[in-house]
Image (cartoon, rainbow, N blue to C red):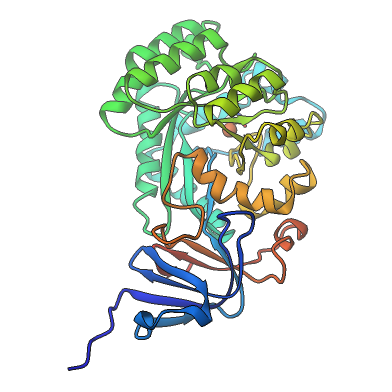
Length: 407
Ligand code: DI6
Ligand code: FE
């Protein structure tokens, strides 16, 4: 009797693999066998074991195949637009001044409160499609434009609903401590008390957040308030992360490392002491070149020191309506190289292997047996082209959980 081939067993051939397990981990004329949503074998095609002879064979057309990209820092769910503010900034007004005048994040809070779940979902889904086209198969989404219980829950529910899309995995972060809402104007401490007593426990009860984030800055929350939030997050069993040292050195990254934060993000003004604490804690440095670019920042994150202490560096879009209206993660590979001088290899690792680490995900980000079958196909001849080319779209295919996705 003839054995019937396993319908879910596939072999992806005619590809140059970038496993990203160690450097690029390049394999010429590679093949990957997948069973359902997992990698079961990979290597040079000529070594493919006979056991896979009856699998469905899919040609990757001679393209490069990398792990699906992971965008580990986005604010994808929001209402309205900040085009008017963009024009103000072009006219010379600073991001911080606009925020202090009641615009900035608070203008998006008003628009987000006014939007229902369906409106938020469709607007976010459109932005997500763009990011997916740049190779993204996993995305983190933060709340933070609701700033009261009902609206923060609304945003997180929308983020979870986006995660029901089989073409993308969503990880959520509760960023109720994004800024002080109008109801608590001038009293960040009272708002932080409300977050720790009421909002965060409710978010946890509904299982809507995978981590807790905070904006530590002169226009955000101070380190005492951050510590209050982190202590409560740990009590409730959630890991923490932080927006820190973006516009000034406020000491947030060091504090976050002391709470074993998954990541500290932005970090333009990060100092060496904090870097040592991050290295000891295994806290990932998430670099956001899109925000640096859009705000015309000049203070570069301390890349050489991060390298010196072996702090892993991830790269993300920070996709948000104000400081980073970014719709392409592969463009961030280019910006991380050109603006921050990451090597092309570091930049690609930053949106794959290290981005997975920043989200605490061990099942993806590299091509290895047992990892998820999430791949991006690239029409390139050398991996450094991903950093070298600017704009356009070199991503010519996406495979999620072992299935080709059309967008
Ligand atoms: N840092 C950021 O990059 C975003 N939030 C934050 O704390 C920007 C949010 C916005 O401008 O709407
Ligand atoms: Fe952000």
